[in-house]
Image 1 (tube, rainbow, N blue to C red):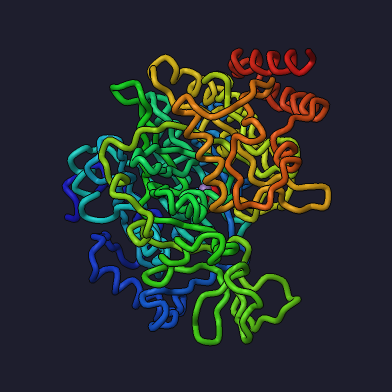
Image 2: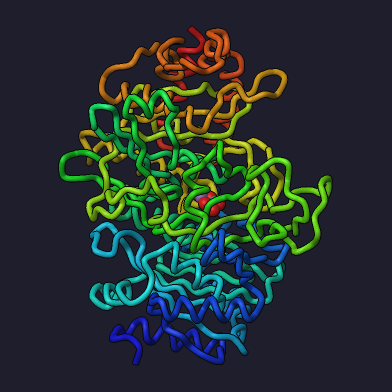
Amino acid sequence: MTTTNKNLEQWVSDVARLTKPDKIHWCTGDEAEKKSIIDLMVKAGTFIPLNPETHPGCYLHRSDPSDVARTEHLTFVCTKDQETAGPNNNWMAPNEGHKKIDALFDGCMKGRTLYVIPYCMGPIDSPLSRCGVEITDSAYVVANMRIMTRMGTPALKRIERENTFVKGLHSTGDLSPDRRFVMHFPEELTIKSIGSGYGGNALLGKKCHALRLGSFQARNEGWLAEHMLIVGIENPKGERHYVAAAFPSACGKTNLAMLIPPQAYREKGWKVFTVGDDIAWIHPGKDGRLYAINPEAGYFGVAPGTGANTNPTALNMLHKNAIFTNVALTKDKKPWWEGLSKPAPEGLTDWQGRPWESGKGPAAHPNSRFTVSAQQCESYTPAAEDAQGVPLSAIIFGGRRKELAPLVVESVSWKHGVFLGASVASETTAAATGAVGVVRRDPMAMQPFCGYNFGDYWTHWLSMEKTSSKLPKIFHVNWFRQDKAGNYMWPGFGDNMRVLEWILKRCEGKGEATRTPIGYLPTVDAIDVSGLNMTPQAMRELLSIEVPAWKLELDGLNEYFAKYGSRLPKDLSEEKKRILNELNS
Ligand code: OXD
Ligand code: MN
């Protein structure tokens, strides 16, 4: 017997009967197991060892070219009642979903090993953490889950103590997009995913458990599961504030989480600490504040664009024990991607293993990734292991918008802050299959990840005011404004510290601001731009509101909100009316 938990033992044997693997392996998470999984993958050619001098313990994995991003159109939430899943999700009735996907699981592990991965999302001894078990036939998934979660024997012990866990069944199947589904059964704490080995579809602890099932559980239990980074910022007086920030996929969350302040700030004593780069579980604390944990133990970050100027911290953690997926390879077996160096080195092999030449498209896939333990990040803080989480001073929402949205705006109330989150729109990126660069609504950056009806989700967000008396202030930022010639107007990256400084001042009741219909905007000189090439005119533009364009935005929002019918909280339509009235006067 491999576990004392009858429920788990029964489920594993039921799955084995259905999927018919050759072997079953219960993951312990120990070093010997790590080595044997890596050896197996190297032998099979699915892991290419990188240069042992410059990148010891690093491997390149090339996925099937049709399997390089999340597939939202094949992702379903299967609740008894369609209204529970809401217009924001693809829906299937649970019995139909099980039937459809179980037919694909039938015999799919013949000739393969079935791995049982017990894992814990969050610090292993935190009451805020939750456990799950992923069954998979992919050694690549095992190697990634080992980095991304607290995986193995300690998680199994906790599951045996608590007798509750999320069941996640995964198989790469035949990798055919025609036989690919990612299905969630939140009422059964169950996930079933087949036909993809891509991170967001296959590492079930991440999007499927920590966000889709997590958000559903969080609502029932009075907390929030969010697509947010968590970063600590220490001022020269040694006071630390924690901020959680939600941005759509591939919009710079990892960069903001690891931001290096501009030199002048560093010299004054400003410091940044990374707690998490993608997901936050946020709970009301007894003192009326909100506390956040990062349920993950590693980063599954976007490689392209990660360079010495944009995110040196990330670059520094990628020289050992990292998995690279779909990046390019240099002649001397180093990983390479666009944005790492210019010009591209001679003799590159592209992400599909073909010789690459300039003009042939990107060498690395635009959604190529690195997987690395959070412990390897030099700005990682032990506070990330705090069982109670870190207290939040501010919550930031943001999107990628060429126009309209100002650099930063502060909400006038919690209600307005929830409205700001609900109204996030952003240009699509390569993190999901489909067109890139199209503006779509992405409330709280959760459009692909909220496991239930957005109307109920916003109501839940609004209700936090009843349980917490010292809620964080809510802001909206836009690092991506462009001028008429298509140039970015704000330098971004480390210079975002300048906006964070204003945000923290506002949290302390300081910082100059003007009340406008859309919220508090910094006065033109409230943000420190010394040393930057920013004219007061450019700052004025970044902090201005164009009334006709905002009215159009509210029209669009009206149409979007209407999809939620009676589930749309009254508070949000009232906020919209208030803003329109103020714009009109
Ligand atoms: C991710 C995503 O991988 O949001 O974090 O797609
Ligand atoms: Mn993400």
